[in-house]
Amino acid sequence: MRSVFVNIGPLVSFRNAPASALENSVESTGLGIVVVDGMIVKIEDSAMLIDEFSIPEGRHSVSGETACFDLKGNAVVPGLIDGHTHLLWAGDRSKEVSWRREGKSYAEIASLGGGIQYTVEQTRMASDDALHILGYQRLREALHTGTTHLEAKSGYGLNVESELRLLEVAERLGNNAHTPTIDHTWMGAHDIPRGQTAETYVEELVSEQLPAIVEQNIARSADVFCEPGWFSTEQSETVLRASKNQGLALRMHVDEFTDGGGGALAADLGVETADHAYHTPMDVRLKMKECGVNTGFLPGTPYAMGDGWPNMDEVVDKAIPFTLASDFNPNCRTLSLPFMCSLMVQRCGMHPLQAVAAVTVNAARTTPHPSGMPHGIIAEGAAANFNIVDGEHWESMVLRPSSSPFSATVLNGQFLPH
Image (tube, rainbow, N blue to C red):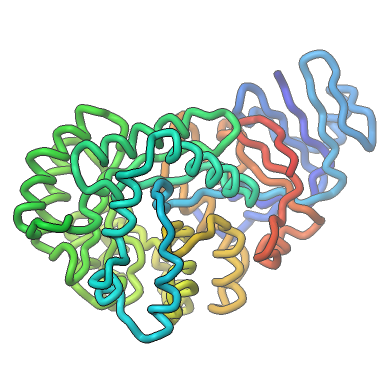
């Protein structure tokens, strides 16, 4: 089946990236897009496509094997990519909001029976079907706000059986034709299970979990929570080097609460992305840049936790490569990337086009599409993932934090109205 989209308003394509994420990335109105079998095969002037496919003016139509969509000047942006989510978990930690307002730290909340360990207990008790339903509902929520692909971590199992189970459920979810595709990450090193020391658990991760994960062959990458009080830089390096030796790509959580040396380790290992990084010093950020490490900023986390914002002006001025992502988890329960962009634009003064690039073309470099096609851009030969803005200005994407800014999403070539 062929789909033809005509009379597009401003088109944010990023098809000239990576030479420049901003220069020439917004194209003039009047273009059209032709999609065949989930791939963009042609971008051309609308008038030529209307003539070629005999498209009736002013309405959608279907003629034979061709479906035509008149966008009537609405702007179009690439499908959004969420490069950091904790998609699958069960339980409710809303009580922690009150504890945080009372001044309790993350570690103190964990000692009261909250935190990651509570979620691990609830997730282990949940059935596969219950986790699948939760995951499906969350993916539909993400799609409604324009996400066409996301990274999903395990990490709320913390033993061989539960970590494998979370990845299996996530794989089933990723095969659904009407929800975002998934890039899978093993994060057994999310916390230290009760009754174990960090040393014994690291040994378990390397000698038991990792071989089972590799044999299962679902996870593309491994992630470690490298933070004082969780996994030290030495322990993180042990897990990450072992994972790399087994063919997994590397990701990290670093420097969320303090400068614990995670950014420096990320640079030394050349990981794909080092996320959070709120307390990473600028000299380390520059070293990460030299080593090809992306910084994944997760603005939903400081928003939900009441923490300060990173200095994005300095990051942009020094051309530090970065992405924005939701960090969806029990304490940050939103999957809206337009909301993340809005936070950066409205609270950190970021240019809206930089924010859009951070959840599209930049995110694609650390979160590949399962088809192997380019994504996060609108270009011939790329995956047919894009969003139709509910209006003529693409900037409205960052001004709708409480609702979806999109009237429809094209997901792997399928037109899905919202």
